[in-house]
Amino acid sequence: MGDRFTGRVALVTGGGSGIGRHTARALAAEGATVVVAGRDKDALAETGGVPVVADVTVESEVEALLATVADRFGRLDVAVNNAGVFGGGMPLAEMPSAEWDRLVATNLTGVYLTMKHEITLMRGTGGTIVNVASNIGAHGRRPGLGAYAATKAAVSVLTRNTALEYIGAGIRINAVSPGPADTAMSLWPGETPDDRAARLASALPIGRVGSLDEITGAILWLASDDSAFTVGHDLVVDGGATA
Image 1 (cartoon, one colour):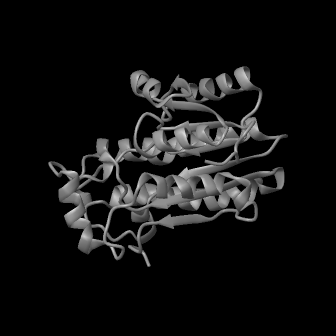
Image 2 (cartoon, rainbow, N blue to C red):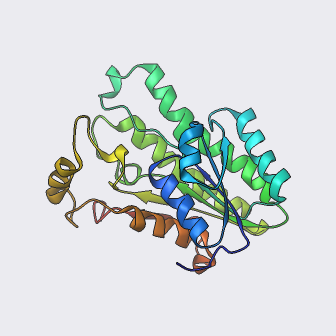
């Protein structure tokens, strides 16, 4: 473990499980004070850090989340916008409008709202923002997952454009697009981790699922000064799936 984030205040959304939980713990292990946001109070408590219950689809709750960060710490140095949901799994014409709205609300509007209020807090001091997109958004070739892919592709485009808008203010914004990682989200319905391993052995060039350390390592690199010359980039970490 290093000390790249010693003295820094970090915020991780979707911090109650999976990539968000692992990222929050990795940031803390490298010295950060970490605010962990999500909808499940008990899950946040298990992650550790400073838990704040907030739904990223509700602007008033996002405002309250960032107000809590400002009131308690006076600054925000690192933000990882990881909150997201998976869904769709059907051709577009068969998808209920409510499912489309659910995916867009969390995966896209949630990133817009959190970036909007994070940037406001970072003005004057600078900081780094990492948005978690998906390699499915990068290649878009998953019939039945068009809505999910569209939200994640939009996060990548939003990241690039917003990065150019605020780099002059010392706010550096990038994205990570993970492939299948060792999380519950990458399991198909009824699938076990062993089933997933067998499926990905032939589906991915690298022949295996990505570890949480590998995904989190990419996020922390973009959030740290190690990537100080990297702006508006979407780092695809997917074992060669989009190569």
